[in-house]
Length: 394
Ligand SMILES: *Cc1c(COP(=O)(O)O)cnc(C)c1O
Image 1 (cartoon, helix red, strand yellow):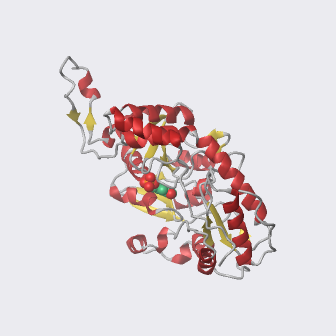
Image 2: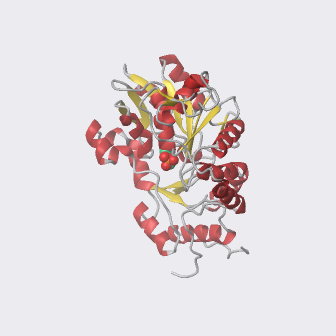
Image 3: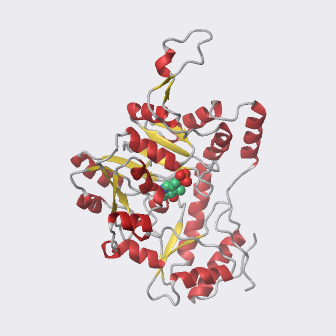
């Protein structure tokens, strides 16, 4: 097919600032966790606000694991997780020997709702892990209220939600047990691989810091500090190896400075898409409150009235050299989760329906205008919408 500019699903926004910071790190003689990781944590906690501490980790998965460990999740406990998420949200519960209770999501937002959460609470429920799907804030007030009534901890999977606001304040600053952000290669800011756990609870932060690095407690020995005693440490638990290197933190420091600018560009592109697709047989994403969406994902659902099914739509866009993705095949469809909990598709009508109709279109801050127009023209071409004006400049 000709006439369409090829569009990748994603290109990271890496500038000379990130490259210079990495080169400076390489020249500094200190590559692993050190001053840059500490500065990244300080900048991150300042950015989120609300007096949180930030703990840099080598993935969001690691951060979610540390958060659940720090609140004491273990065998016999149950954790509520939305069905429409990446397996990382749920797998960390199993790392700790606890059980996962998968719950269907809301048809409008594709997030876990307070009502669905409340209905799923049982005698062993200890925690809930809302996912800000695609970057749209969940109803954090509602979820926190239900959790507080039942003495349940809230650990937010905020992998998509930097920056996302709820009630005018950033996700991460809402007083849940912890919020965990991802800096995976295609997330809203990246360190290649990496993540950040934020919490306003000092004891939780302290536990996560110790467990992040082998269960080493340096503070316990600080009181014995004397010249030449810098090698002393104690081991207080069988911890993990989840620290973020200074090489990765170097990228993160520079990316964080751009987080708001990158979101503005994402929002502008989302606005163009929402307008361009308004007359098509597509269910478009909810905008949320002002600033309430990071626009990490632009996930649309094909109407039953669409002239093509989801797989056909993705294939037709691929023919036009537009690369799409899909978030997510719900967990109840995955062999491990289905078999472990004997899950039936009938119990997940919303995520089942979403599974059949969801497509994630390319949306990233460095998209050129001709790429945006190519996505629009291709989608309209496939779905039989009227033609659009030719591309204006690049
Ligand atoms: C990316 C992602 C994760 C895991 O992030 P990593 O940094 O790759 O470990 C967890 N949950 C969701 C919803 C994600 O999209």
